[in-house]
Image (tube, rainbow, N blue to C red):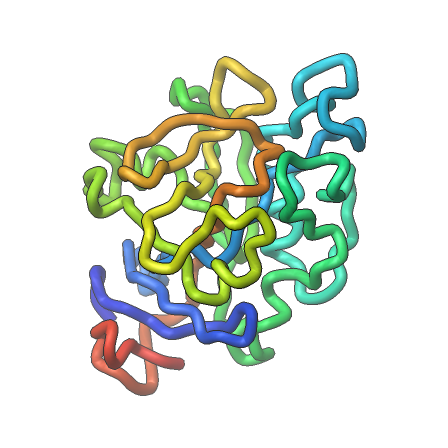
Length: 242
């Protein structure tokens, strides 16, 4: 397995997921989804109702990854045990509430879940100030990885993502369309607003927006414990498979 190649691994909405190999560290490849897999809020308004509360996190959701709804959903194998306000329709902007949806990892086999590995991630805000360390199988890419001058060497064009057919069909807000670039969340909190998160827009530019926006896409990333695929040659047409 080499950086730049493609891997088929796991399933979501009954479709296999295509990933790109972005890094290999100590024999552990870091994979980033080639497509937007769904649209979901980063975090719901913590008061339970949009615009209600005494601070921005209560009104519009928190931008802290460790406390986010999206982190809990991505790392759950079944019904999510929410530890903060669930992403109900009253607590998000637009229509993609997901409080009753089984977690993202339900579509991964036991063998695939066994290949996931957890590595500490130091999360900094948009000013580069260290905020927290998390340790999860599934996470979102950060400013430091995808931004201009970031580790992955991406530019605006190479940051652009389109949704899968399944993502477009699931989207209740009707913003996602197959073949059209769309916006997606990063892991990085915006320093000036406790409810704002960094995102990549349809042009591949990086901006910031509310954590409670459920129209933004989800482009997960993960580490695998091994580079030893059992089939495939790493192309989009014949990706590596485990």
